[in-house]
Length: 116
Length: 140
Image (cartoon, rainbow over all chains, first blue to last red):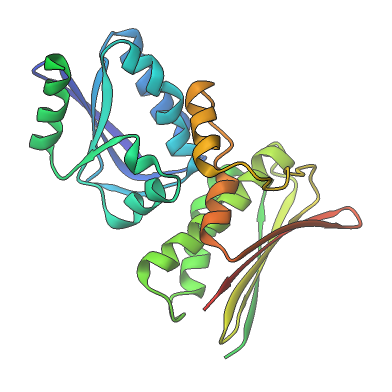
């Protein structure tokens, strides 16, 4: 699994390429912890190349969710494939996390957080 | 059609992708949609991750054994090891409550079993002597 990061207009995009499972979840955990420390609370998660996610991968986002929201931030996932989406759905997380079609919508969703 | 295949691997979390690949190869012709196949792979991955991490503390010298049986009416997977992982039974708590608890307590773990229960028709943990067995069944 590879992780790429970029900051555009104050929003951090984390792109995950490959499988996010119990052997790779700690790499994503490290990146998110670093984002939190750097006060980047608005995170776009690019899932275009995310082939697989298990509970260990979901656990990373779940464990940081409240801390990011307390700082008026959030995770917004986009470009997710059907298999990965179904894992969120099995746990009802599709109703808890923001999951949108594409990057543009994801940016709009995060920008709207400032207005609300 | 009846097929029984065995697979043995060290208790190492880096082997999880190989396990998923193995399962995906074996069930590729099963009468299931691609989504259903991906969910069976997920359930097996969760059971193996629990056994490797919690039962055997990623000890490479220990073995994890999988036995996959494909019949006309079901797919059964038995994952066995000599570890010390004995999960709590499913209980009466809803998945929503368990997820809420994970969010509130900032917990990273505890949802793998929920996924296994959500995907498979039957999930059973039992011991035979010193061997722990996780049995997963999906009806076709």
